Amino acid sequence: MKKRLLSAAAVSFLGMIINAQQIKFEEYDLPNGLHVILHQDNTAPVVTTGVMYHVGAKDEAVGRTGMAHFFEHLLFEGTKNIKRGDWFKIVSSNGGTNNANTTNDRTYYYETFPSNNEQLGLWMESERMKSGTVNQIGVDTQREVVKEEKRLRMDNQPYGNLFTAVQNNLFTKHPYHWSTIGSMEDLNAATLSEFQDFYKKFYVPNNATLVVAGDIKPEQTKKWILEYYGDIPKGKLYPKNFPKDEPITKEKEVTVTDKNIQLPAYVFAYRTPSNKEKDAYILDMLSSYLSNGKSSVLYKKLVDQEKKALQVQAFNQGLEDAGIFAFFAIPMGSTAKNTLQSDIDAEIKKLQTTLISEEDYQKLQNQFENQFVNSNSSIQGIASSLATNHVLMGDTNLINKELDIYRSVSRQDIMNAAKKYLNPNQRIIINYLPEKK
Image (cartoon, rainbow, N blue to C red; front, top):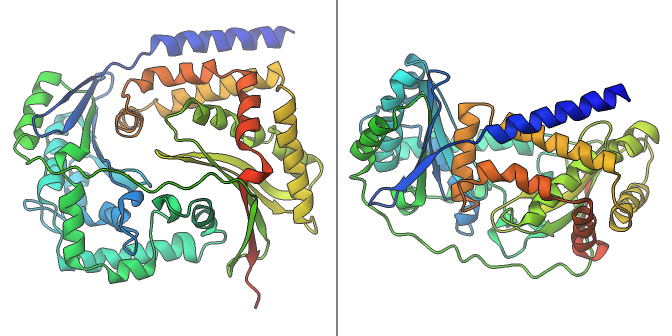
């Protein structure tokens, strides 16, 4: 009893801390359409400068997949004023770090420097935006880099193409149909002029959000931003009218083979709403309840107690236009697919007919409070959250409201979401099997 009281007090204290930690920011637009977000935090002498472009794999043309991710590599080649091969040298020699990443919906580049090099980070990202080097030597070099990355991460990795199989079958019309990294054939076929056109089309200020977070003096930062970005011409914005898939109303089963595996895997995948909708938050909590940690429902039952599965997971992938909720299971020994499917379906049925316990509900709330604190515990994390919330969610201030959304999710909401989205006639079953030799 004493331990439970202490735990409740600790949770209450954590809640007070979180409520007190409102993340302050300022945002505005330059005349060329560049959206700027500033967050001042002078507790540590570091600054993150990030630029998120609203271009991802879904913006690619059929037959030219992989272009968005390709630029994540290509735009470190250099600029008009940064020689080829010097980007990383400049960053490291000035005490900084940098990285980039691409999703189906956006591409994000950032540098973190000691705050006395804030101006350098701003200048470098402006160079990338207005004069990134897109020439044949860079394309040829990075094409091989990306192809090798695809071989290492996907083609030669056990279960490396499993998520691609999910995308291929869950979406047939929407460009979420293909993977972010694209195909070898498309990467080989793309010409220099196509890469140059892609850069001109999407790497424009009115398709970008600049975030500067950390030990800054906002008025000085604004002057540098105007100096470096203000004269970059506005580009044409293209409508994102992507074809939509009809609702899944009949269960479909497909088989995919993988030469790199010895054990089969089974996926039960459902198409779900955009991450802008509250149901996406509910499904996040639902997936955590089912398989986050060794005490979760599916792990405890199928892996720990009954030893029917070597691995089992439920995950919710939130995307801008739709979502993916899927169960993934690798059987233990001779366990049949139908056994795993029946057990997973039984847990779904429980969720659809019985409210989760108050204890499990509070555990979920604690998990998401911790997750929120961790994701915004660094300047880099805050910068990424601010940019993501503006570009993909349409509300920068979600950084201060998102936890309240999770807190507002009730046990009844979880039951309703399970009823609405996790029905057999709404899913794709993927039998991911070893390739016969």
